Length: 201
Image (tube, rainbow, N blue to C red):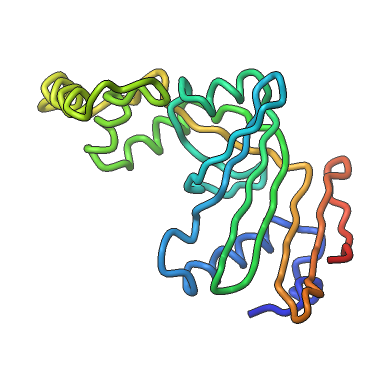
């Protein structure tokens, strides 16, 4: 485990450091090392947060997929600013990300949707995410309805289901240290590059 992020050889490239930490988390964490908290806010500044799964790390940002008519989707339309937090308990590390979320290109969303299990693809059609559900059997019936609709064919991506890329302006790497004297390595966007600083814990 890297005690000092500044000595890790990734100066100036937060994405390279994140990929390294994620790879180490994949070995150390038993469940869902790609899990992250996603915080969004509506136009009035009311914040909500939920746990999502990271589905891609690109030089432009961090990618996740969801129903765009969900509460998070509505909030991102009103206010594109978002925050992510990764917590790897066994490694005693956190990564915090802040930036604007933008939709991924349709072709990218199509390509990812094709990799999902068929049951998840059908669920994307059946679930009216963030709307009231009278009883579980209603959802089960909707799944069966779409099973029949797409029987014998590939399930297409619903028009209301896509991905977002959080394009960061701030990335913080946090490493636990004794006596709460933690390491905090901060990257802030500086033009086309990054400004790198160490902050007090």
